[in-house]
Image (cartoon, rainbow, N blue to C red; front, side):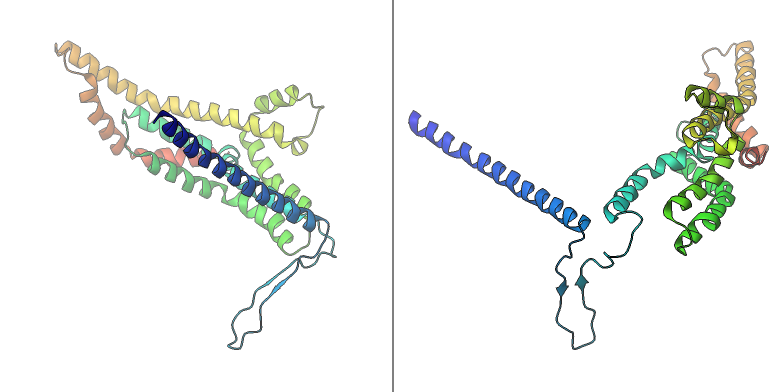
Length: 281
């Protein structure tokens, strides 16, 4: 009985190993086939076209192949695809760090914290409002990019590298306009750059300088937002102490007063107006 059970265990333990080895072989074949396909396309070898018989009812036909291999191309298709995938993966970071999104998001989060509200407005609402305000503020910059870089590239008037150089000009000008010279000079000195005109500064220096400038400006605006609400907390706490109601949490009385004050002064209008106008200077 013992030998039988041991034999059954050995017999059953062989199947997972066979499946695993066969799976690795299939994966290796797929990877090898993919590399062979990329190598053949890079060497300019025409792949056999899949030609379907002519349709009698006027339907669409499918023809797979590589056309225009004899024509000069700026960048190989595989490199273009890799660049596109990388750009899509970094798109959220680019939007966050090279636009006005950072300042608006931090200021709106300070508003909710100053009002002592835990989850109202919800994060989705604040992020959505931040995105729409970002689109509103950055529209002139994106229109310049479209007119000076994207449209000429679509019309095949300029190359991809020249289009990229033209697209970075409006973004660089926007960031330099909002960034402090002290912050940009900090990263220029760390990078050991020679004295350079602002228009010729590389993005590796302009972007981090712009980010820390946005953080400083948003924290300054957040401090100014906290001042009136702190005064309400102090007044409520003082009144409760003078009345001997030390067991009453001051937040219970101060929260409705904060919301009332915010509504009476039309707080959202003032905050959005202040944030938008802060990018006009």
